[in-house]
Amino acid sequence: MIAKPLAHGPCNSKLKASSPVFIPRRRRVVFFWTTIIVAVGTALGIGTIYLAEDDGKDPDIPAFIMLLLSCFVVGFAQGIGQFYRFAVCEVCDPYPSSRAITMVIGGGVAAAFAGPLGSAATRYIIPGYDFAGSYYFMGLLVLINGVAVAQVDFSDAEASKKNDDGALEEGDEEEYVESLGPVPAAAPEERKSLWKIVTEPDILISIMMTTLAHTTMLILMGPITLAMQDEDLTLGDQSKFTTSTIVLMCHFLCMFSPGFFTGKLMQEAGPYVVSTLGGGIFIISTLVLLLGENLWNFWAGMMLCGVAWNFLFSAGTVLLTSLYETGDAIRVQGINDVLIFGVAGCGSFSSGFLYSWEGWRMVVGVAGVGVALNLAMLAWLQRRRHLRELDPVAQYERDFPRMSHESMSVSSQLSMVLDDDAESTPSSSRRGSPETRRPLISQ
Image 1 (cartoon, rainbow, N blue to C red):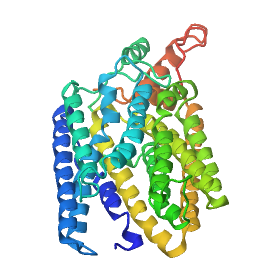
Image 2 (cartoon, rainbow, N blue to C red; image 1 turned 180 degrees about the vertical axis):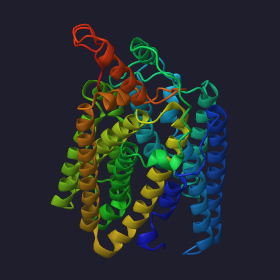
Image 3 (cartoon, one colour; image 1 turned 30 degrees about the vertical axis):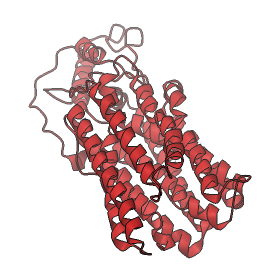
């Protein structure tokens, strides 16, 4: 018997492996090879089941290590698979990228049903080898995924425009700059280092918000099966295992099903509002979980947790895609997922020890601290956005964050041209007057 603090070690191994320092550049090839890697992990899992049953030892350390390796390999592949939500931006034109991203995340609805129900249904199909059938079922899903990936033409070219959250198209950006008049040439700017990019306040806070949301959700989800089984909670005549599976299935459903309307909500209200709403739902979730350890507490609390995660994770992803330039997309996406799933893996691992030492309430309390930090960072980011709106040059740079210039920065162009206008043009006919100026669209 594996000790409780390590009971979800295989799951944690999978989560830590889902932060690979591998940044895909040829989407289609990488995604196809990802399915091969998952197939290898599946084979290792099947081997683990046969090894454990044949040895008959308790505890069976070699089988446990092999299971960890299996989950690590599968987790590595799933970490690369997280780039689907970014890759869709390259093939969704003219569909709004915010809605495309959330639709990809919403695809997890199928996983919410297929995963738990398929695993339970195939658990005993191989006589004498519990869960071997579940791994064979996983292999079937891998095959289906590989066929689906082969049908998609992933383009390496980055999206040429930002078509969501009120941003203007690239053609409009160039037209706006040209309308201001000629700009003196200047030396091209050097490419920013990755460290300089990710330490920009807006990008850093956006990554940290998504990381905290994912980590908080996993801290709660990791030990919930143990917590429910320790309380002997059952639904009717269902077993404790089946009851916890149903609760998790509802949690997964609430994690992904909002994706079908979250994108539309972000188009209407913006990612900041959706993030704030997600943080508020997270607070309600932790309060429900703290009220007691009854079945309804776990059920309602984890469903609310799933909805909150969707809002925060989706809004954070959409917000991040609006903050970096096109040439930096792959690097920023890579470091974003490394941080998200690396930190989340550590959080999931530590939650087992927290539960073993102090119980379920301590786990929920730590999750509550994560929610509070997330809301604090969101408030700070919104304050920066508000102050930026008071500066027209900064507002322009926010509206056109991906515009590439061979000569000089946007702020320099605007400052020089507007200064020339002020000196040479009467105020009544100035190109920046309220009667003739084309308004900037703010997010």
